[in-house]
Figure (cartoon, one colour):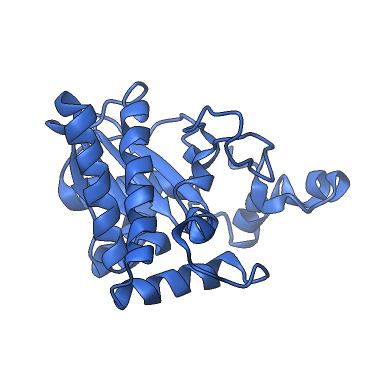
Length: 240
């Protein structure tokens, strides 16, 4: 009913303030806006729906790699589902020594492998020095700049994330009917994104050939990135 239940966005809000102000936030907004058609949908779902509408294809999993990892799914009928497709918090690495998410407390979550956090975490392993106090967005910018300069260390970071992605997609295929994968987000901008996708394809081709034969990867152009989600989101509320 558009009420807020649980969200990392409000992790710093005390329980009393959450129950008093946050829980019904979107219902209050709708009321202030004269009860216009209003729906709250996970951004990952809108990403997948925008991709489906743009490509004219279904069975599509959308993954946006930015500050975190947004996930969404459109089924064979071209519909978003009521599933909780928060792949940022879905396990993709079952090693007990895998990095731990600071909010959920779980280890091996997608956010540690498919976001700017993954890029920042791999800096040291790639041999790239960076001030530990730099925020993740700045570390990502540095890697992208090195990538533009042809630095092999930056390339290895994207190759590694691509390998992560290939195995994760095979894992996701246990739960989703997959034919199309939509990849976007700040962490995939520039030439690194192409290397990342190529790495995922190589893993699928080598380790999961049957799956590789039925999955297509898509990276939206700038027009779709900027307008596609808005158009898809506008189609969701029921109009009187």
